[in-house]
Image (cartoon, rainbow, N blue to C red; front, side, top):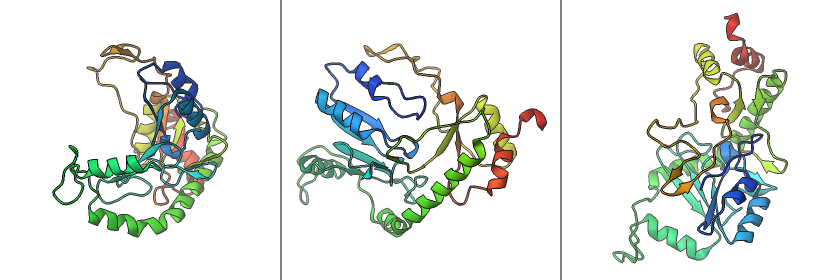
Length: 267
C-alpha cells in the first residue's frame, strides 16, 4: 500500500500510513527523503502498536540522525546507497544494510553471496550482491572526509535559506525539530517548476528533476493494482525543484537569488 506525505516536509506521514494498514500489512518502509530522517518516535510507536517490521530507506541519509540517533539505527533494518552521487559515494554501485538483529544480519550475508555459508556450501538461494573490494577501498578513503563535506552542505543550505527567505513564491521544505538533516538534496517548491528549471539551465546551472514521471501505461493513483488500491497523492512532485548543495556547485551567495529566481518575464 502507498501512503501520502506531509506537505511541509515531503516525508511519509505516519497518520496516513496508519490509515491504509490492512491485516496483510507486515512492514513499513519509511523513507528518509532528501537526507531528512522521518519521525522515528512516531514510526517506532506505530510499528510496535501493529506488530510491523520498520525498514528505513536511508539511501539518501548517510550522516542523518533523529535526536542524535543515527539513521540506520532507528528501525529494524536500514538500507544505504553508495551510488556515486550520494553524500558518501563509491565510484560504482554499492550499498549496505544495517540491523541490530543478529539473525537478520546473518540472513542478509547469506543472500548477498549466493546463499553460501562456508566455501561451496549453499544453504539458501541467494544473489551476487557483494560490494567489491575496489569500491570498498574508495569508500574507506572518502569516509574520513564525510564530516567536512556534510558541514559544507549545511553552509550551502544556510545560504539558500537566507537568500530565498525574501521570495514568497518559493517554499522551502521544513526540517522537523530533532532531525539531523544530511541535506543530500535541497529541494524547494515553486509554481511553474519546469519554467524555473529551464531558467536554471539557461543560466548555466546544472540541475536534474529527481521526481519520476508516471508512465502513460501505468494506472493512475487511486485505482486498483492487483486488487490493492492506493490513495490519490497530494499535488507535490510537479512543484519540486532540487538545488545543488555540494561545495563545488554552489555559487557565491550574492548570485543565488538573482540567478535562481529572476522573473522569466524580465529576460
